[in-house]
Each structure stands twice: as structure tokens, then as C-alpha cells.
Image 1: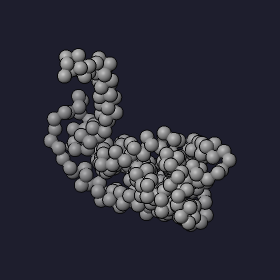
Image 2 (image 1 turned 60 degrees about the vertical axis):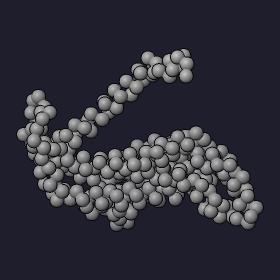
Image 3 (image 1 turned 90 degrees about the vertical axis):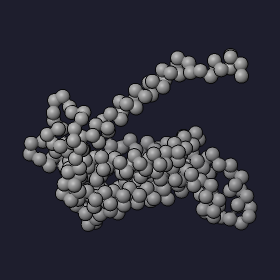
Image 4 (image 1 turned 30 degrees about the horizontal axis):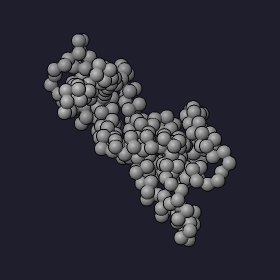
Length: 283
């Protein structure tokens, strides 16, 4: 290769500045998470030292203490059930709604999609209180199914919008061929469109699970003990002592809460990024 070609491949000053800016932004956003993880392994006397100790004797006593005290494992299981349950229900309802807006001859379909998406702008507390009153009237408070349905209210608009983008990116000739071969509209949707859209379905499901995993308000209002999720456990530990928050317990349970989501997101980040990008292209 010529010297000119090799010089063109060298990073420019602007490219280096963008990389430096990206690394700085990552450091700023990841520093609180790293500090939480490090603090969770400190003894109580090491947490409040001034200046903070960078070198200390790590301990897992806080993890062992609060595994049983705060019923962490039970609440973690509740979180898994509610997150994946609401994700699956939202995928079924949102995918069908997205397909209808993308393919059926509905007047003003794009406007309808925008209105449904804008419903996410309603303050959650405006929905949580009526949901609690209805659930109490029906005797469904502190139940997994109640929390799953509550989460669907903010997950389905996202699923609808993302899946509508996937369906719009598919050539309509696929369905036309299936209809000519004798398939009904539902048959073409379930036999042709859904298998082709599996990457979009998986990435959207991942997105829903992550959103449901970290939700606090609905879980705090609609549950009491049996269906309580891990974010509620963290909120309870924050006021567990009369002298202030128990930072050792907070950081330990916070680390246990964040770790599964981080591992899950890293394992499926390719699907998640593809789903959001493809859904936004035609959305």
C-alpha cells in the first residue's frame, strides 16, 4: 500500500476526541455502579472512613446476613416471574397490535401508533392508585398476575412500536404469496411473519424484561409480601435502621439486583441493539 493510503487510515484528531469523550462518559456513568460493588464488600467501619479506603480487607458477611433477613432470593424469584411474565404477555399483545398497524388498511394507522406510544407519557402514579383500588376490590392485591398486568400497561406500547417497525421492513409479497396459497391473514401472520421476525421478537422481549426488572412504583403499591420484587426490598432496606440507611445492605442487595441484568444484557446485546435500531428505521 502507498504511504498516502496508510496515512488515511490513521485516526484523526476528531476521531481520538470522540473516543476520549466516549470513554469519559462511560467512566462517569459506571463510577457509581463500581463504587456500589466495592462498598458491598467493605466492613461497616470501612464504609464511612474519610478519605475513603481504596485498599481494605474484603468480606461477604453483608451478603450472608441479608440473604435470609430480607428474603432476597424469594423476591429475586418474584422479579424473574413478573419480568418474564409481563414480557411474554406484552410480546403477544404488542406484536399483534404492531402487525395490525403495519399491514391492515386502517385509516390513520401511523397516528394511532403515535397516540398509543404517547400514552407512556401519563405519570405512573396516576395509574398506580386506580390499579390498587381495582385490585383490592377484586381481591387481587399482592399477586403475581396483578403485577404482570400492571407492567403490561407501559410495556405494550413499546412492543407495538418496535414490532411495527420490524413488520414494515418486511416485503408485503411474503404475505401475498401465503394468502394466494390459501392461508388466512392469521395463518400468514403466525406461519410466515412471526418466524421471520424472531430476531425482533427476541430483542423486544429482552427490552421488556430489563424495563420490568427495575420497576418500583407499581410493585410498591400493588404488593405487600408474597409478590414483592427485589426493587421493593432495596427500598425497604433503605429505611431499615433508625440511624439512617444501612449502606452495606443497600450496596450488597443492589449488586445482587444489578448483576443478573448486566450479565443478561451483555449476553444478548447484539439482539437488543439490532431490535431497537431496526424498529426505529421504519417507526
